[in-house]
Image (cartoon, rainbow over all chains, first blue to last red; front, side, top):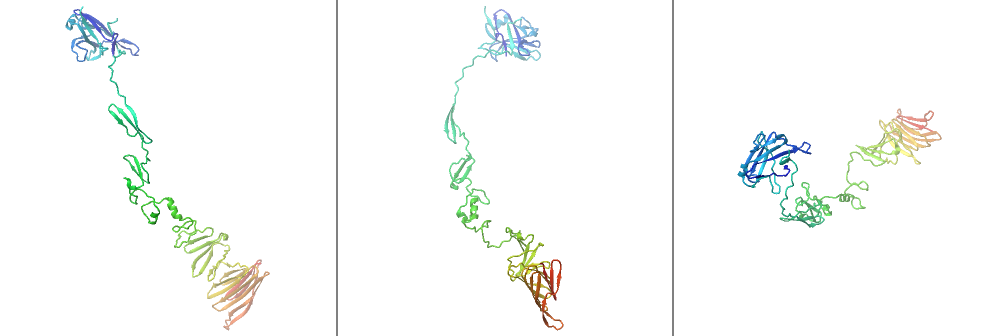
Length: 137
Length: 349
């Protein structure tokens, strides 16, 4: 299971404004006693905004984040060797979505096979899930 | 540089939220239905009802459901049933026969009387039948330790041993052996027409006692001696020397050894006493009547002999006495010779 410090992403974006959020991925060291950055060199990130927190949810927005993608549109892998990337919510995305809470799915994809390797946003806790919140000012 | 959101792959995740409270479970209730030495049965109350177990105790193979001498095993129930009456049992009620297996019934007195062939005899019954009634001699069997009269003819093909005095039957020979006579064996063979032939296998004297030789011919071969050991009364040996022509002699001896050697007769007398010798030759009607008196190392033989004079063809009776004396260091022979008989008297003082 992949766990964030806060267990779940709760990215707040003001409607009509864009915002970039950074993410880092770490994995256990070989001795299993610590964590080290996950190398994203051979991967890309598939970022989705879902209509609901279900398996059959409608994908409202999907962005593929690579080392060369547009940081002001999709986002970008800022430091592949250290497992760091950014996802970007545009003002247009906020208008498309409208206000509200929208589950998101962030998957690490194999760059060669374009198959998901693992999902960062799997699971739920006390009804919570990774999401973005589009809020009014 | 710290990110807004930091993910750690395979780190222990957050505790899952409390699940929905489950419905209350059902605890079965177990009670004892039957608890005996042979049965242990339980009732188990489940959500669906009450379940009764089978007997949880194994049934001993020797479990008996009744009483009686007839038994039946039912493999379907693993129970053994028995009864006093075989017809109360379903399985194996038939009595055993020579050809078919079945139950065995022990014989009773009536079965013995009726010579039953479908019952079994116990060792005790068999021993009792053989032994007969206590104190009575068994009549149906020959035993080893009772005095019985055998009225049937028996053939002992391998001989019979009668204890210390061994009587062996071998063909037509009957052998009598007395250990006091060892190493001699006396064979009494071919009892035929009243003649009893006596042979012995040893070189020493064979002493016969208490043998009734009346009307019996005791044959002594030419190399043997017929020695009569007398007591106070003189012993008489009345027999014949088979010679050409029938010749008969009678020797009455008192403590004398008589050696018959065809055609001579030797009388050895080593103890004082009187011996009479009577010899008759049927072919020529010659007879010899001699009295031998041995005493004090001296032999006096007196008597008469009747012979036929060949010239005159007349019978002549002559006095006869010691006619020739021979001596050696131990024996003195007195020889009386008349044709064809030579009578030798040896005296061993």
